[in-house]
Length: 55
Image (cartoon, rainbow, N blue to C red):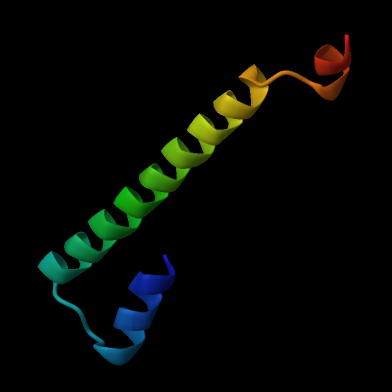
């Protein structure tokens, strides 16, 4: 939402189409972040713990 606030501050008022595009970009970025962190968490949960490695 930071990108949306920056454009809103500098280009006030934005037309409806521009606002939709900015929100779509923001939501796409959030989705990519969620997928990245979910994949990283899954990868970390599948790696052996130090205790498992030692035994």
